[in-house]
Image (cartoon, rainbow, N blue to C red; front, side, top):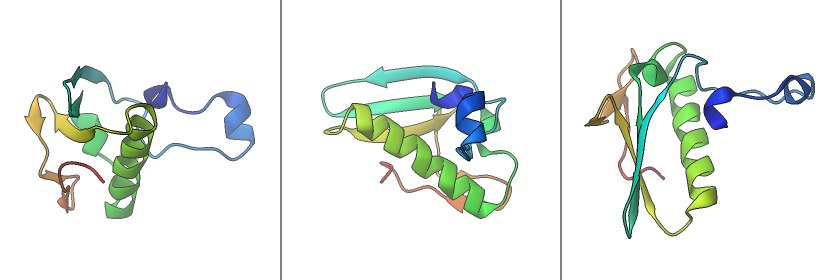
Length: 96
């Protein structure tokens, strides 16, 4: 649902998403203490460094809202992310 973005009604209420519309989920892997979210490279494209930081926070808060006791890791195209976006925003893993 997060990747779909806000509904029309939510958009009319001023709710928006920093996550680009063309991001696709490759996989979600869970084990006893962690969750790995694997997305396509579009997640890191577009916007400036603040937008990239906000989308990572948005993703982290959403996942932690569903699995609060697990560490969350972000992968892009099957590789753990260290830097993201055109400006090379450092991504601390696990996500905070």
